Image (tube, rainbow, N blue to C red):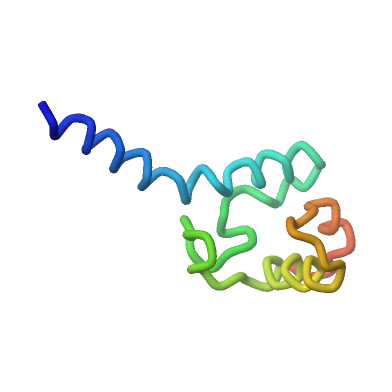
Length: 85
């Protein structure tokens, strides 16, 4: 009986890294960026954990913009200025 809550909690914790980025994919599509189809659109890994995945070229662009603008969160509207692949 005590194992069930532990299993449920473990499953929820394992799902957090995936859920953390899915809103970005949806938001990018809603903004008209149809080429954004998964986490790999901005990350090297398919399901990156926060801070544990290297960004690809597009992700590096967004990270640089975030640092240049000194803001806490990436703004996907910046993708309109991205000139890469």
